[in-house]
Length: 296
Image (cartoon, rainbow, N blue to C red; front, side):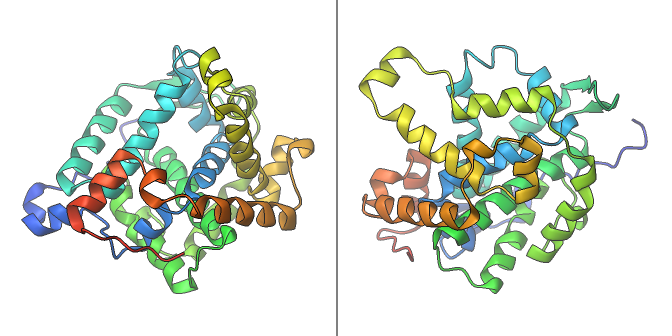
């Protein structure tokens, strides 16, 4: 482990002004804010989790270090969502604090993945890069397929904007992608090392049918709504990823998946933004602007 690349240092508060801190690492003019406030965001997030599970070592890190995962499933999902939203919509100080907590947790976690025999630490850069790239690719590609108006230049800008997120988690900026072409090349190179392990299969089953309290299933629309999002998340995976999962019954054709995703987005756009947004997103908008207007 002594020759493992060094993690990028956390950015220092000395690097930004008070106004930059208020706007956060992205800000209301960023492509990131457009994508992360779009109704397609939830589907993209589930797609990212399903894609991330196909890396045997990264998935082992989740399964091995998630005691009580089944009982605390919703809490863990909530914490993950809050982390991404804090990095996106929080102040730079808040984002840095959240990243420091995640780094501290990662530093303590390690294991040996059985199918590859690889001993690892959760904060090894290639594992962090895999998770980062799956998230960026999933949120971007899902938003575009859902109908959010994004040019090729916007798409590349989104990838570059997430150099900030990469650095926060510890990935040196020189190793993170800067364009969609960089992302595509990364996945082409890593595909031979991906596989469906028992941990991945179990993890994705839980994404389709997550444990829910009885009252949640009976008194709320959570179960059918979640099933729709999960099914679309799976259907929007790359063909090669769906083939690894060997779950054709859960998938739509690419054209049907895109049509269903656009229909869902259109329906959700009818819901007022501030109803769709989480408290973290609303607080971010309230901090930087009194009357946010987003492009559909």
